[in-house]
Length: 341
Image (cartoon, rainbow, N blue to C red; front, side, top):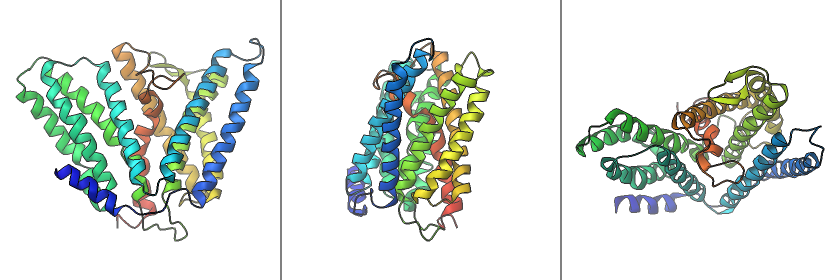
């Protein structure tokens, strides 16, 4: 009942007016235009002889563009609803599904099942309710899972009385909760930032859209650059498609694009700030991709799921976002708003 009343409070306190006004709409238009160009380019490359273009690279490119269309459409629809709560709920559902994929990969024992019930149906929604209540509850949503979730999961599994592989089981659930729920929840939390140091900036919807766009774009550019100019693989046993050349070239291209997107006015950053923030997103996104690849190799699987056509599961699609979101949020909060002062 307490959680339900908090949800009602969240809905009542949410600002009105849909989020696709002004600069955000301009940024969305730019994204749709780029997607149209990318779709056309993919079809042209698909018709080229196999000897001139690697079919595997073209197919991967086409699948990623399709996934972008889906993500852009879903996010745009939530922005059209006259409350940011819709976006918070969307990310909450994504977290739920991503955590399900993560837990499914790792075997659980009977003693873990009640703990997982609390993780899925209490801690996960509670985290997003606190996010949706706004920056006034920042102290709560920033420590709910790292402190209280950590202590609860450990104690609850211990109370179940099953000590076999205890540390492994606790660590598995906590890592999944941190990455899939806690870290990802910082993305919709961007919508509630306010009191900007840039007096001309008034909405956070464009900031969230910018963040997701740069995170996904950096992942794509690092992949493509690695395929064309990559020579030195970062960690062959973890991810053979990620090279140092692709990482640096992709990150550099992402910075240039990020600086150009600052001209839309969708973020509180100027050009060089936008470039630096894009680099931060690209670096953390690459760290997320490598980390999640290491987990997959440890479990002996290729992908986390099959929900997104051509790009495996939800967690495969959002790994970069999960790692970049907390860092991007805190840098933005501490250096571009007066909230931390």
